[in-house]
Length: 384
Image 1 (cartoon, rainbow, N blue to C red):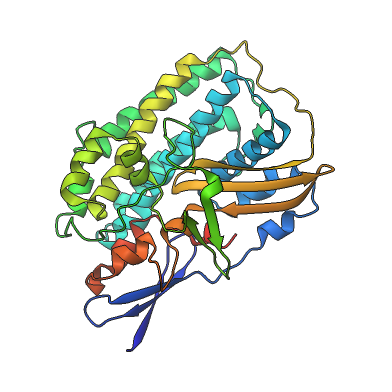
Image 2: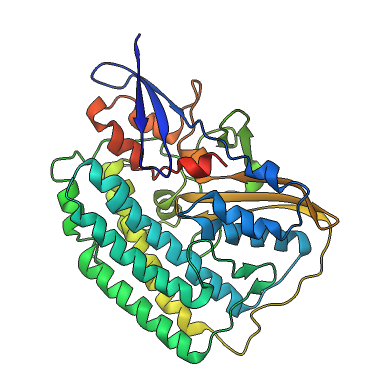
């Protein structure tokens, strides 16, 4: 059978879909051909270099890579950080997730159906405000370096905390007015699905959460994750593909609102999109709450005792569970490995289908772009 190649762009890079089928997709292979070799570049470098290198894996979720890098080093050194440092980390990493969800919806997914460019400016507006909020604690954004093994480098005053509270409050209020409210009403969401079936893109109905940051609840452990080696590496849990990301987090957390939608549309495109927009609202409420719990009298940083050892951890990044693994010998990195969410969601196999493959197979060819992009693909992270 003839194979049609389709290049998917605007996914933080590009991917190629090799599609079999004339009107409906009978089978699809997914290819990411880039390779940055960051893990090899880290070998024999000082462990602190990873704090600068790893955020460059991605321009969207660099903060998550910084957070994961600090956490995996802290696990090697058996470091305990203050509640103050934990809260600051939770605020900035949560805000990065919110920012990504908004950018993904309006800049990646929305244009597949709605061509009006005014919606892109809505994403730009929110992204700018969120960057301002993150900058109060972390400085420049993206690629800030304020999370370090032992805590954070910032030590804000009460005036700066009040400034941050005001920014966070406004972002939350504007989000509920312009994007989605607590009843899940959204003019933009309704417009997006006005002529798009809500039940397309059903997938594996298997969900995985490995990180424990913010209010997310893990239902698995990193020890049971394995990679299938190749030019791009599939990621399996207990030998199977699982979906990671906001829908997985909502289902594992047993969110009543999302479960109600899931009951009707299963793990299709509508549930996947709603869960991401709703998660952004939940995270905005969360950061508005925890900022009030900060005790500025606590230390921001405690210098760790350097040890040799190895560790493997997971955090919840915008697109799902992100894994970092390290081995340190004499303060140098002897081994580093990164497993990104796209390896779970957008893997490609002829024997066991990934969430994206399963969602695409059997659907009309005209829905290829929107179904593929509803997983929030990151080709750049995939090419690390």
